[in-house]
Length: 508
Image (cartoon, rainbow, N blue to C red):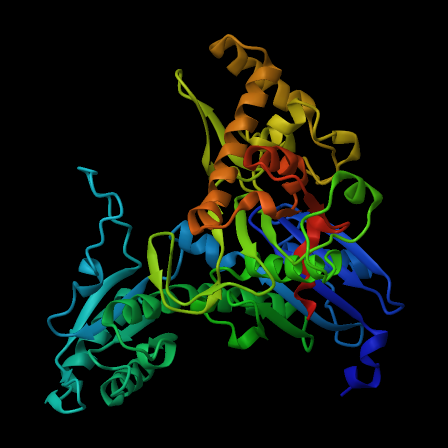
C-alpha cells in the first residue's frame, strides 16, 4: 500500500535485456528522461546478477541494498537464461512419465533425416534423464483401455524421488483430451514432493504425441531454472512488479513465466523494438527504400515497411523478416529440441561478438563456441581466447578509448588492444599473413555466416532482399551491418540511436 502512495509516473521504470554476454538496461527517470547502462552478464567477482546490479547502479544504491516499489514502478525483462540452459544442456534433471510401451517414442520421434546422405547420424541429447512407464491407457475416444495402476506408479515415482529427481514431465496417450490419468499422476507426484510437475494437457493440450511430449519435457526441464532466477531477482526487489518477455513477443508476470515460453525471450524483445522503430522510420506512401541523398538527409524512409532484422549480440546473431506484421511459428525446433508453442520467427546463427576464432593449420573458423561474458574475448582482460570482438579491435573498428570501462578483474578497465594483438601475432606467424589481414579474414567469415542466415529467411522464401532495408541493432550490429548489406546487395541500413539496447522497446 505504501508503494501506491507514490504515483506511477513519479517512480523509475526499467527495461532490461539480459543477453549471453552483455546485459542492457534502459531506465526512465521520474522526470521522463531516459538513461542507458550496460554490464557484463557474468562478473561473479562484482555482482550476483547483472540486471539487479545495473538497477542499483542507476538508483545510486549500495550492493545488497533492496530495490523498493516506492522508487521503482516496474521492471520488464527479456532473458536468455532458458535459452542458454537449453543450448548447454544445463537444465533440471527431469523424469519422463509416459504410457507403458512408449518409453522410446520421443527418441524415435518422426525419424526425420535433415542430412539425408550423412553416414554418421548424431542425434541430439535427450533432455530427460530417466523414464517411468505407467500402467495405463486411454483410448482415442475416451474409453479406458487400461485403468491407471496408482500404487505401482507411486512406487516407481518414489524410487526416482529418492534418486534426487524433482522435475517430472507427464505425457500419456490421448492425455491432451482425456486428462483423468494425467491429473491422477500429477496428484501422486505432488504428494511425494516433486517440485516441478508439467502435464501435457496443461502445457500443450493438442494432438500429436511426440510434439506434445517434447514441449512438456522442455517445460519441466527449464521451468525450475527460470523459477530460481525469478525468485533470485524478486528477492532483491520485494514488491516491485516484474514482467518477462515471452517467445511470442508478449509480456507475462514473472511468476507465470514458463520454460516452454522462454526460449526466445531475449530475441523476441528485439523484434518488437525493431517493429516499433521501423514504423517510426517509414512513411506510408508506396515506394522503395530511399536513395543515398534521402538517407543522408535523415528524412523518413519512403515506402511500405520492409526490413530485415539484424540483431548481433555477444553470443549469437538473430535475423528476422518484417513487412508490416510479426511472423510467428507454432511448431519449431531449437537446439535439436522440437517444441510446439507460439514464438517469433527468428533464425539464429552462432556468430556473435564473442564467437571464438580458430585456425587449424588449414582454414580459419568462426564459432560456434562463444567466449561468453566470463572470461570473454581476449581484449576483456580476463585471459580469454580470440573472438570476433578482438578482430574488430585489431582492425580499428572498435576503439578501446570510446568503449565503457567494464573490464579486468575490478571491472574498471578499458578493452586491451595489446591482448588481442599478441594473440593475432601468433596466428599471423602460423598463417604467414599480417595480424590485420588475419583479423580481416575472420571478420569476412563471420559476415558470410550472417549473410547466409539472412538468405534463409528471405531469398530462400522468395523475398527479394535487395528491396529491403537492413535494420541493425544489438551490441555488435553496427560493426558489421555495412559488410552484411554489401554481401547481400542491400543499399539501405537503418540504425536507431539506441540500437545497442533496442530490446528496451518491450515496454509496450
